[in-house]
Length: 269
Image (cartoon, rainbow, N blue to C red; front, side, top):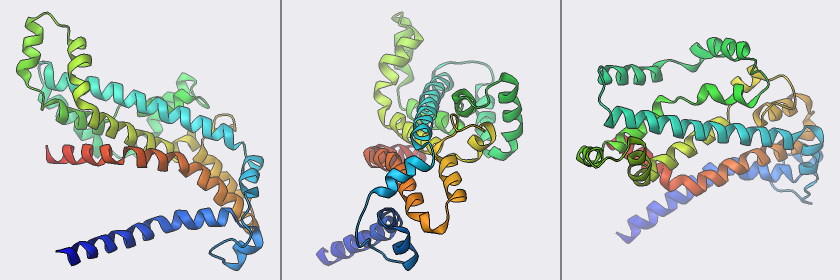
């Protein structure tokens, strides 16, 4: 049994090394000068953080980081609020055609994002939201996956408790806020982490609805840098990449336990 456990840990360590090697190598390149990068060194001979300074000088990196952070937080809050309210309605509120509406709601998950891109763009354009955080965030507030995930959690709460609260004169929102939300922390954290990471890594939609440096996000910025820089400046590009992935790594490491538990609970239920 002990030998088996050792084998499992060795396999896990090797898997972790394989998964983390690209990030480690990108960080190593970010500390090299152009000559070392072209020579294919794995480790820098004379580590320097000049490439990180260069990343802020070549493009408005701080503006891009702030824009991405604002948009990701807006989408995260919007998805959590709307998904939790929709899930509460599908579980605790009786109305005609609830089952059919929920099935249609889930069917939207089968529609590829590319099919809705043009209508969404025309809507954002008509509202005058191009080059704004609202145009970048509002189309992603409604999420069928988030509603389904939270609905599965809300269904574990006894319906009799809701009926008792109604008899006692407690409002629906008070029951939602004081009873349902506190016992649903794991799926809420899961949805928050998921929405933040997916929004932070968006590329195509920000490319469509922004055309100024003041409104662009980090993914557009890194693509812009890759297009403009020559091969000898890949150290600067990798420095920008490291700066961009640091927030996602921190959030993933901080919330991976809740993320795993929430996705597992949703699958089992």
